[in-house]
Amino acid sequence: MPQTRVTSTGQISLPKTILRYLNLNPGDRVEFDRTADGRVVLKKVWVHEPKPLIQPSAKSVLKNMQVDVEHSAEPKPKRTDD
Image (cartoon, rainbow, N blue to C red; front, side):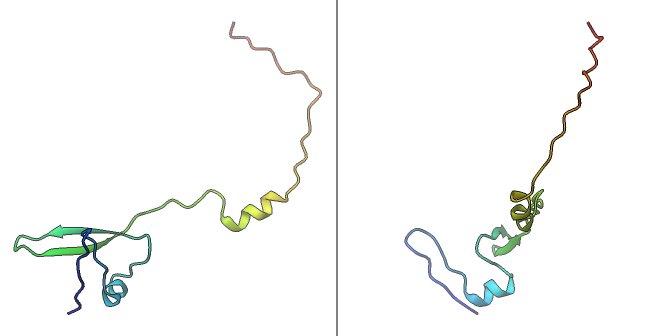
């Protein structure tokens, strides 16, 4: 079973075998649960992050896009809720 040391600030580094087993990558979140028999269980937290409205690859396309705006010569209708 892999082992690690606790630093003076209370931090630990997870062994590579555990990182691979849990499919953990930099920035991922984990949680700890205590069991009734006193063990501590480490779990990966699956966070659903919404997709961005504009995909990163589309930003460069939108940056170079030209937009033509046309104005109507017709007057706007007057409000009647007075």
